[in-house]
Length: 201
Image 1 (tube, rainbow, N blue to C red):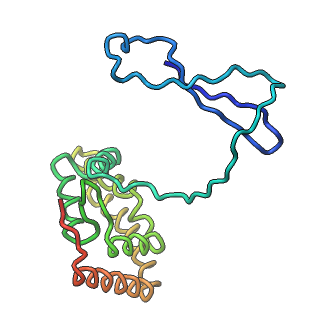
Image 2 (image 1 turned 45 degrees about the horizontal axis):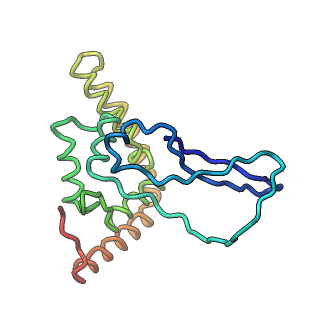
Image 3 (image 1 turned 180 degrees about the vertical axis):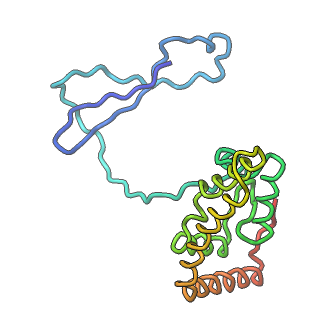
């Protein structure tokens, strides 16, 4: 099968496209015709051909946010960055659910107002903590200690120094941090009292 796009005339600043489909080799459709697509064969065009406009309209659309991560996608990303082990990754997810940062609904990880507030605060005051490579470096360093290639005191000193710098950012903006968290907690409590809390699946 062949899917393709052919462009017609291209006035300055305007791009016209047409999509079509033509079966050029039936292959498995010979014995399994149930998935045969409907053909939409495009006419052959050459430069200079004139086309007649049958219909024209304007569509207004808004961009949509990407879908939430599924639990399996989150586990795959954790494995990619080396966060946790096969035995502990599921526990990490469960801990975040228990703390109220997100809920598992229809196998998707849905952030709560508290979770969104925490991410928003950290992105402003401690972006290193939500950088997956920060945790990944820490995990790898711990593994290097078990292999004997790094000393525990050296690793401790390195990450304590980084943590101290992050803490100083929090101290300098503690009033803003407190207001954001209080607002998120009130919203979470309000939703819970209103019966809008979702059951975890």
